[in-house]
Image (cartoon, rainbow, N blue to C red; front, top):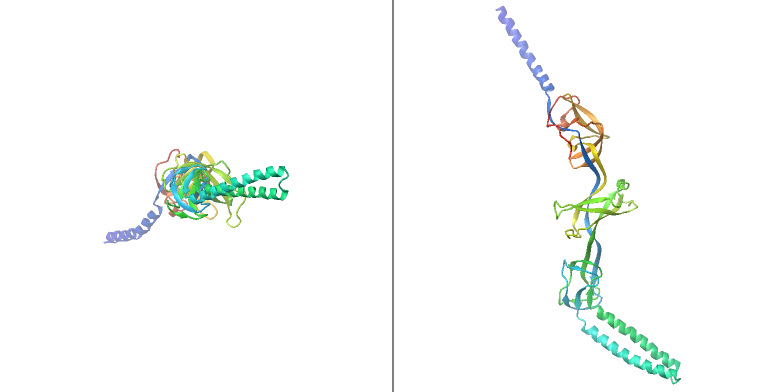
Amino acid sequence: MKWAGIALLAALVAAGCRPKDEEKSKVDAPVSVEAASVVLGDVTGAYSGTTTLEPEAQAMVVAKTSGVVLRLNVEEGSEVSAGQTLAVLDRERSLLELNRARATLDKLENDFRRSREMFSKKLLSSEDYERVRFNVDAERAAFKLAELEVSYGTITAPIDGVIAKRMVKVGNLIQTNQTLFQIDDFKPLWGILSVPERELATLRVGQPVRLLVDSLPGIPFTGRVARVAPVVDPQSGTFRVTTEFNDPQGRLKSGMFGRFEVVFDRRAGVMVIPVDALIEEDAARAVFVIEGGLAKRRIVGVGYQNGSLIEVREGLKVGERVVTVGRTTLREGARVNALGAPAGKAP
């Protein structure tokens, strides 16, 4: 009976201690995380932005006279050269005016020749001679105006480029100053960026630019910085950067929406880690480094970011492992079970 009581007491003591032991075991259990190694890789410093492509030059072709459109020589998408005929208007009335001006001029010139002979023989007064000469000069000007009016019946391209818009049809009666065509010069195309003033010291003329447009997915285009404005807009705090693109295949068009990346620095063989390893703090950035199976918080200095990788300039060594998944629930000195094999050299 005595031994039975002792056994019962021992069982109760053991039962009372088990929850504490289990709780302690849970606290000391390692946390499963994913980790990656600090490796060497190449990074670039770049400024990214978006804008719409603009043509090198753009011209709105307007009618300089009124008339009915008799013929169209171009359509939207046609490449044209400066001086090329785009359309022809009905010039019957202006041609009649030109013929009348020519006949009048011929008559006055004959009168002037006779007057000059008479004036040389002192048979005509100076006043009458000057009046005839003045009439001839006035009619010559009228004849030139009539010639100009006839020339306005032929609509020509003022610049080289592509017909972006045609706003007229054959048979339309157009009026003076009515817009007929829009011509865009795609060689080159400009991308205008409004860049924050903090980047003023990093962007320079000649730097390479990479462009991706939504309408041509997966096709990168290369250009360059053509101009950098020397002043900052005090209202927006930005300065103007003009990028230049030439596409011999003609795939780029004005009005396309593009995503730009201006590369201003390249660094080879530097330490990189996944961006997911960073812990954002108020004044610094930190990571959890795995040392002897424990998580150690460490402040790091970072540099350029390229996609999912970011440059580490101080605070880590090549080969060390940093927590990428599960870092938000870790505490200093926690035991961890790291998943993921050490990586090799970064791409």
